[in-house]
Length: 436
Image (cartoon, rainbow, N blue to C red; front, side, top):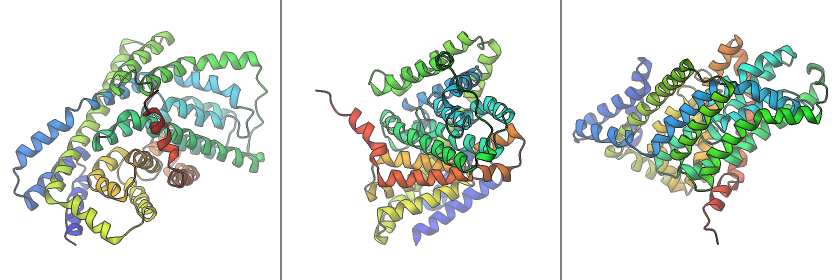
């Protein structure tokens, strides 16, 4: 019961800070300071300075602003136009037609961005006007973008996987490998839903475009070549052990600049905007991580994580029951916090529970990202919903209802991940085996 009282105190203080409009990172630091004053005799100032410096000086974290910068550069190029032109001739004859461009385009951009909101914005700024002009159902346009945009969190290079890996001291490269098959699986599940829906609602679908010639398909494929080469260079260098995540991120930034220069979209203004955008996002994440590290230390001094793990262990929960409870917990938490904040805020307490239950931490990272993806399309704080509201002008209720089927598909993905954990663990296991 002491653990529950401590949790109640921490949550009450945190909700007060957040409700006052204070930034998440500052709120986490404030909760930590108050908690240490109330429940420990440790010197707060020294502990805070040491912890925040340690959290901010991690070499692994240098990959984070670089991958963010790469996405910011590509966001300001003609990549969205190239994705649409490159994918449309190949996908327009499938049941569901060009709705598949939303999903495939998001999957491709996710592999060179790592940001969910940037993925939605980049693909949507080209596909929404084109699909509306062709009279595709608006609910399906918005729904597929909302769902597929979350792939930016899962398909590497994923910003949230970097943060998770740093938080629990796990290999970023292995987490990136683990995200590949689940990301492909989730994209295929979205596309399968589009196929089934379109077959059941033929009258609401526009007539398909005329079949494209092979010459047109090959020219369209060449539109995708720069993005494909960048994906191969960045992820291939990590998977083959040629480069660390940070070194691959540098390669990605250079590749992004080359693409921007080749397309004629690299200007002094676009360079400045990309740099400022990456700086703002990186600073926000760094502050949240610093606050989270200090909160983890404060809770560790109180003995809360260890005591809570022991208490839950005494309850005798099965692994399945624990996963169901955590899924519900993160979905509810996602209604009030963004994905990054939800992960860093909870890992100090959740990590010992998960390790005690015997879950593979690589697998749990992928599971966690899929659940956090749901928060991206869950009102009232779903970032993807806000992006789509700004792009379409539709009210939040309409956008949330359009995204609801994708939410259900993500729940199905969690079930598959639990039933077949090898979907996430197979590639890291194979790639880590020594070659003979």
